[in-house]
Amino acid sequence: MSGELSPIDKAKFVAAKRAVEYVEDGMRVGMGTGSTAAWMVRCLGEMVREEGLNITAVPTSTRTAELARSVGIKVVSLDEAKWLDVTIDGADEYDGNLNLIKGGGGALLQEKIVATASDQMVVIADISKQVETLGAFPLPVEVIPFGWQTSKALIEETLIGLDVLGRTTSLRMNGDAAFLTDEGNYILDLHLHRIGNARQMSLVLNQIPGVVENGLFVDICDVVVIGYGDGKVEVRDINNGTVEESRLDFVESDNLFADLED
Ligand SMILES: O=C(CO)[C@H](O)[C@H](O)COP(=O)(O)O
Image 1 (spheres, rainbow, N blue to C red):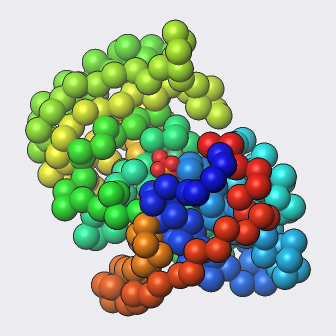
Image 2 (cartoon, rainbow, N blue to C red):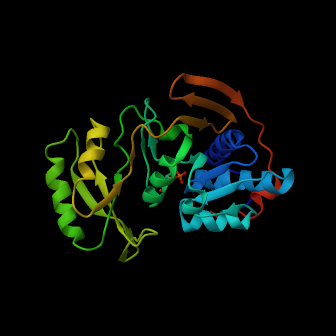
């Protein structure tokens, strides 16, 4: 990437820049996956290199692990870290209760395990991710490859009894082949348009044989940091609503932007 960043990238950057203020010296930090999370990794990398911040990171994908290492962050497995102080991750949608749809990047399983093993989950997003009701974004469901068509049929049958507007499902592809998660599983995208009861949907989906996990994050996220293209940042807290509005200066530091590819 070269030249001026787009407003959407600036929004992602300022959200990430504000969110890394939740990270303190000595913390064990869960690192999400996706283009917004990548900004957070770069910001933390800069703090490690420039300010001597001492953190240990647990990434949620091989992509994030590679990026974290490349910017100088110490990476360990979740089993080594055992428990995390904070996880910072992106999302595909968030609603007024800070419930989420995640998994657009295919990393929902590790993301959910890591977020659940954290004292606090901070989501970073631009305002386009905000919805009144979850479901406009297709809901990713990770299934094992064995008998995946049976799992797909069972999911479609189950959807008949649930409060949704659409019921089509599709196998996520990577070119001509099925997309494979880091665990070697498939992703089914559920085109539901509106999810009336996210908690019920999540519980029901995870009962279906072959389903490993779904992309609904209910009662997991504590804080959403929302970035805007003009540098405005809003912080919403699950207990207190909007707790802060501020503006961050946008400085195109070579350290952060020199190696951008996506
Ligand atoms: O859940 C995710 C990956 O599994 C991502 O956080 C989500 O897809 C948002 O990605 P981006 O920040 O690129 O919009």
